Image (cartoon, one colour):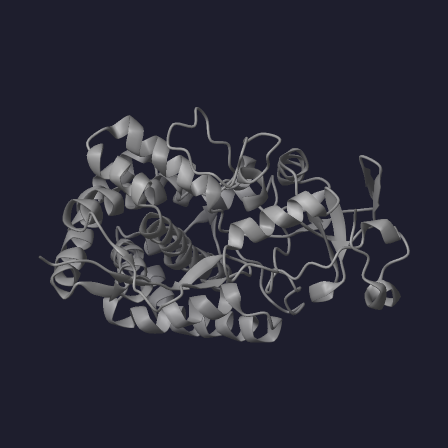
Length: 409
């Protein structure tokens, strides 16, 4: 039964039935401090399949895979033109290519698609592995680490900054900006962080447009559409989005993987014993990703429409959160249980259709390298006694602090 929020009814649009009002706050999901995904699963079990919340400007939430998949694929009715909750200021530039819909979107996506093909990612693996090994071997003698700062934020940003040929010395500043963009509730603060990133990128983009190289940033900012190079503002938007994607998503998933393995010695031992079994490790990665979805991106309703029996009005915002797909017991039995033998884990961690994440192959490769190299050197570890992992929800879900310990004997 829906939990009706009486205090919010005054702000409820007339087309929203009272029975579909449910209290959900993307930035403070009840129970998320203990287990983000169990908290979302509880909502899935207790709320209507599609409900409206008065929080964060008021928006719809789709909780079941059937509806999420449909909305993610239907660009004619559910536009990507503003993916943020709450809405960002109207003057904000579109995030290219994420906030573009077909047929415009594919033209901007091409350089990313070519740069991150499975073959290209295989060529990057040596760099990924080198960074992982170096980082782990520096940490291992200490017997402890704060995993997010010491590893999860190190591996993807080192690899990504190498791809775009930006100074590694800038990583801490860029990570701070990324944190504000994806986890701060206030849209004005998020907007300022995006502007600050644009200011940072401005000189590098001017340089790459004047003297292009073979790096990924040069390819993005010199993209031609219909024989015309994208303008400087579009280049900043494009580079900003790709930079945020490279900084946060994999780091967040690494945090959830490490937390899970620290808490579940049986699963950890299975992986340690079968690290050379490519098929098993691949399946384990898919299953852990299924259980630990990351991104939450909104859609904007284009024109008044009816979806199933639901009346939607132009401008309505809908959150078809990817993580609900992996947690849906209608397609994944016992979804909170991680089973490395699950025949086919179904998830939407990387989205669907035209907007499916072009970095999926690289993300999987980085996760695989982490498991292989970490578990070879630190096969047994735990959450440091007396500490509690800090978890966060928002536009992305994450472990923001994770103290780990292990024996060095």
